[in-house]
Length: 255
Image (cartoon, rainbow, N blue to C red; front, top):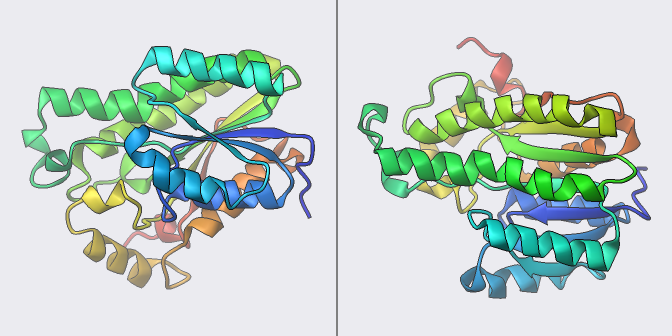
């Protein structure tokens, strides 16, 4: 059994009980980690905080990752409260809903900017905040999706963002390896999260995954949580810059 007692983990991206961030937070909590869980804004606070309260010892913080001042402030708070950090989970992705339907060629300049700012640059920003607090090394992880590699109709600009995110993982892993900080991504199969519901034909996407995946089903967020727990632990001490698939094997199939 993995034991994270004495470790402090920060989880960005909790929205509701369907969030992959919630599945990861539960697994880290079960393993004994001290949790700081971040939600985007006041509107999301009520639902997020009700979940956080289900994890004894966990604390909630508001942080809009598109705002550098809020990122700086929350890491000052973390330094004061925890002293050091060991684990950072970046479970954040967003593109305007109208960009996730129709043809990719119709992507707007503003939609492209928003998708890459919120979904990609935010990993760089929160990593920059966390790294100085990872004085004993650490594990940083984010969430990707197979559309970073292959065309998934309607995923559109978010696919470009995920491709950028995976490249960002590799560059951060290179930058931070000398500090014994590992950076990896989990490429999860489709889950009906708040963000995913904006993708056109999500139900068809999930049916296709279940039909074609070797395990013959879709995943649930607790399975992503299990992979995150492994990446958070010393069992993954020599793994960095990698994309780990948690998709019931869908990514190995040609057709």
